[in-house]
Image (cartoon, rainbow, N blue to C red):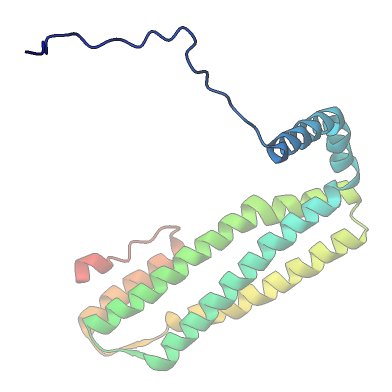
Length: 201
């Protein structure tokens, strides 16, 4: 009878297989290019920085200023069109539902208006003055800044006329009229007025 109690024979290979990592020539070439680029950037980083500061600062500042102003122009135009659409569709506040809709439109307008104010005081005004200080106040760049500021004032007045109309709507409901007057007063005087839209829901 065959004996099945024999122990398994362990593999005692004296030369175990080694893991060989093979890199393709393409990977090696790409790695070499990256290393060379990093070395060149390290060598010329100081010169590039000085070039940007000395030669392109005015143009860079002017670009930042123009981008900020374009965003503000879009905000002013968007607010004006949205208010005009409401004025054409709902010229009278008849009840609490129409008041709630009016509050929603006004609240959206106020939020975008605050975004525009942040851009104005954080970017447009300081960067515009830096453009003048860097390039001189009697230059083409400063002339562009001045023209854009004038256009900003015109658009702001154009958009503000619709806001004035939103504060002069007729209210046929006495309860809604009291709340309407309260919000109009807060909208014009407070930075973060409480529109109380959720409480009316």
